[in-house]
Figure 1 (spheres, rainbow over the protein chains, first blue to last red):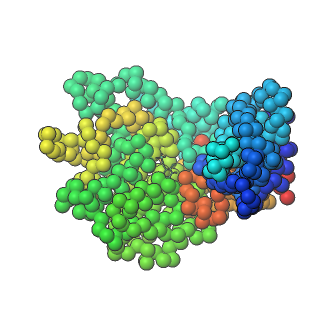
Figure 2: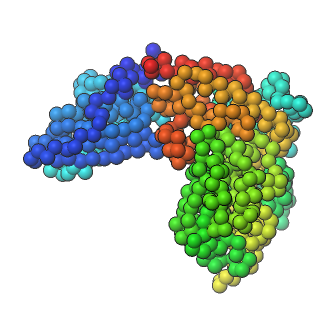
Figure 3: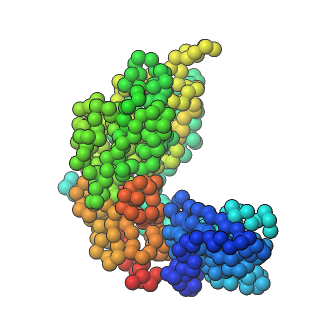
Length: 159
Length: 436
Ligand SMILES: Cc1ncc(COP(=O)(O)O)c(C=O)c1O
């Protein structure tokens, strides 16, 4: 596989074409739920994402919805992340966020840790992206939006 | 001094194949390979050009043989450094049709435009006295730019308006990517104090109708500021003939070093203009209470200057001058025609004029169903370097309803074969992403 094909894995192309969670959903007014929204921009290439998160009273992700425009890497990454964090407790979301950042700094080598890669699931498909310094921030855009929207929801303070 | 290129375009046309080969041999970087041994196809010269060996040598030679502070010191090295610095100014002035005293060294075009914008606010605050009256703004005054501007020729004017209460207006861009002058008469009016516009768009490649715009500004007594970043490297430019009041351009886009550029100002205007950066080297008499300023250009060259880079930029101007800008322009036009053939590739849409009249080889485009960043990545895999993004012109991209484009741009060393390789790679992009 060429490095280009390593970057544009089929999983990534599929998610870019058929994104999960795309289309902002109004936060449900369910009792005890917390909601947050974040808008993130990558000014160098104009990638944008607006992301909403809904957190259960128990401190798990009830749902993520988003709207965005940008390259296939940024859009696929938000999509993969959306499926990955569905129903996941916030402490685990934080761990996944850390693992994904580690993956993005791995310069194409991956995490060399089966548990970690299992936890990241489809998100490990972005390993190839970490060989292209200019594209890493594309892959991280959605994760930044999730982190920020969680902070804005107030859920991090209470969990 | 090392000698500059001996190649010249023939009288009638563009650069011949052998001349182009000789030009390419002058640029060491063009020999390198990228992405696993592929020959580099550098189509990002509008962002920054590559440098001929003679420019690199001239800069090194300055450090090895002449390095000293300029315009001060009584020793021989200081004399030689000053001479090299001032000869470079003369070379740049001759290249752009200006007098030596009308060329002010600046770190680049961005800095140069800011110097003029801040001169207006300083004059508005009363600095520069009566002489600075042409730079004074009053409530209700207007500054006119165009929708096609690089942020460097837009944001400084927005900021000037915010500081002074002047109002920013702009000339719109038509669907063909050229300035729409339909309402020029109601946009440039008696209230207009500045008309700032780009000579050649760094996105569409369109050449602006300078004569018409200068005439419109003159009619109402407004000053003109030309962003000449993309024109000076690629076509014959004479600021005196164009009749503009100010112009800005960067060394690094015209085969010269980074960190240096120039502001051109008509002599009377530079003499009347208050300084922006103040400090050493730009003064006459300094007391604890106040300071009188040196005449231009020194008045606008505060602090230690980028001497080696300026000397390199002078060399670059000479290199281009010897190559002959008429031939360079024809070469550009030939490459523009080759680049515009991408419009025939299914799913490719060019942003900007599709005809070769009044445009250069700067071609921005979108590929249906594939983001510009992804387009750039696939081209890069074939060794083809293009720029992706908004190219520091967000309003122009918004005008065309796109967030980002990919852009191919040429310089003197670009070949028709390189453009053909680019077209071929581009034709495969949609298939790679499975775009229908
Ligand atoms: C049309 C135009 N204007 C201004 C600039 C700014 O030049 P610099 O970044 O060298 O100051 C550029 C280059 O990016 C340009 O293409």
